[in-house]
Length: 239
Ligand code: NAD
Image (cartoon, rainbow, N blue to C red; front, side, top):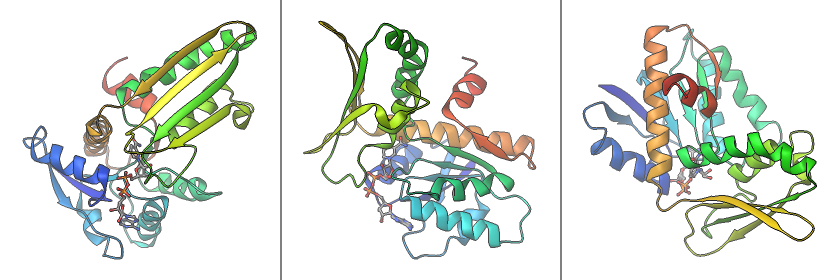
């Protein structure tokens, strides 16, 4: 039974993670601790893996606490928070000296597939003269815009100048997560996208990744570095 620590346990995503740990994953994993804002993070260092669905600040607080501790290696962490400010992801990266750090703006299988389709086909569409435009929609509570997923897609479509990819965020109602990529030609348009139907896809993805990280760490406690969704799908699922 793997012990999972959770940052953001009280939020929309955190509640889904807890619900799935208590149901689908109850034979494999259990929630060990979910410190709220301002509470001690000490219990997280006893876990097999940590999931973060809170805020960049909380993930950075964990990193700072990890660097202070007299532990050579700390538990691996799957970070799902988005809305990173200037230099913040670089600071988080320091964790790679102490553990396995996994950062994903989107833990869903569908967005991984969308990203791979774009990775393979965006260069062709660019050569053919199509202009990419991303339309993304989320609930009105969401703090960051454009979404972390939209930024990831921008970087795939245009690695050399991602900010040049027109991106239009909608923040309205209770939209869970909608990313549509349009490629406009002179007199035609191609479209591919992903629409989340509920938040379980993100929570399930994060738990699967956390269990994978915990296994990697159990096999080699000194393993450190950064891993991505591509590493997970290629290594864990053999894709
Ligand atoms: P939310 O606002 O409902 O929940 C965030 C929770 O984190 C809140 O309960 C808040 O109190 C807590 N929190 C904030 N700062 C904290 C701190 N310093 N210490 C401990 N807890 C803290 O938000 P949400 O919809 O659950 O989303 C959380 C994050 O996950 C956002 O950044 C969102 O964009 C991201 N997200 C990522 C994915 C993905 O697949 N990677 C999917 C959905 C949401």
